[in-house]
Length: 285
Image (cartoon, rainbow, N blue to C red; front, side, top):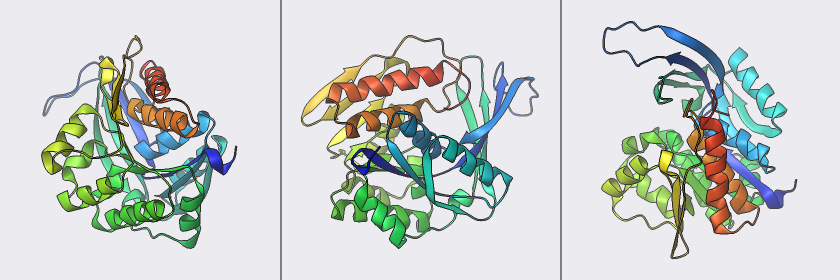
């Protein structure tokens, strides 16, 4: 694989503790856990691993803890052929507690830990931004003032060097400051929201003027607006087991298809197919 087919992913790396329950508990209620798993996670980390599985040379920029969980991330990235030269280790690795009910839907509690720490655009990072085919940014980093500045600097570096920028707004987009959101959208070439996130964005800033907008619609598949054309793709029929990581898989496969030179309709096809594979099993990737 060469830099002509490569992506730099910037975002969170969070340990995912998943608890499978028959139904989500109400306030004060005690419910039985029927199964449990612990794995590396975080939207950006999941996307990086899937991108590599799709045959794209993938570089990951993040901060993980200087602890056992952080080392597990490093080892898993290397096993997945994800370049870790831009991964920093300090503090404690963040984690999530995810409850998955019988329908496959999830509810999450998160502690970002090291992923919330301040980072800078180093010479090595700036050099990598110029060489990759695309930069994928995670919206989780836009909620912290110092990290938002970091993300905006990366986006500006990318635009200045002619590298396209993709943004996964993530479910926290409503917590992003309106000024920051407008700035990052102005630097974005590919926006990858789900329907709820897109509605939140339009309520905050009005019409979205991004060249390519691919919208994840869950069991109804996905749609895309690109180059004055609209595309759609129905979801693959699968028995949903766990929706964790489905959106991350869609983002990664979509981008992998895009940087590989496939036609636009194939971008959606690959994204929907990979998302379906994730939904049909337990775990994010």
